[in-house]
Amino acid sequence: MLRKFVLTVITAAVMFSCSSDKEDAQNASDIIGTWDLTALQIDENNATTDEQFGKEILDFLTAEQCYVVTLTFNEDSSLVAENSGSYIEINVNPDGSGLDIPCPVESDTDISTYTFDGERLSFIDQNLETVTVTVQISGNTMTISAVELGLDSFDTGGQLVFTRR
Image (cartoon, rainbow, N blue to C red; front, side, top):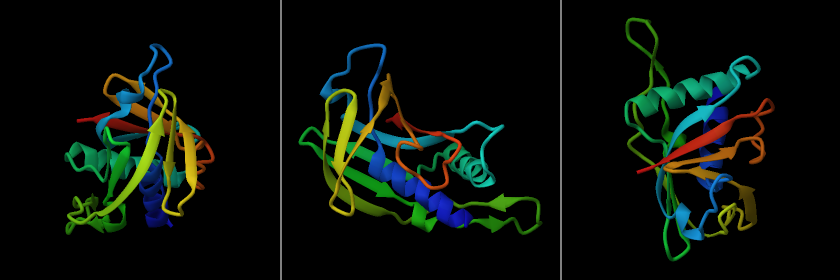
């Protein structure tokens, strides 16, 4: 179940990354660039066990400079999503002192098209359906609500946080 949760978070992040800034007017070009999934923000007091464990895994990998989801928004309106989530292995350290989560060396790549108006991101998902989500960009940080993405394991909320390279 945990693996399914982690894969769901990562897959959704790949397919639903986005951007906008409520403080300053955003331009459609603000999303252009390469973004790495670097954090999952959750309410620690209300989060489910799966949400907490998913956050711990992502925090661990990010601290190792291992980014399991990378999104590249190009000027030609193409979106390249690299996702290593299907290749995450969770092992116990040989001495039993904790978990060992090596950085995946394999990834899946999806190519799509997108539009971005400074607040709403629309893209074609893997089922060839148009998905539209509200995003926030502040400097080099992009966030999207995990609930808005419709992630099954995010009943209590959460934000997927991406950092621009």
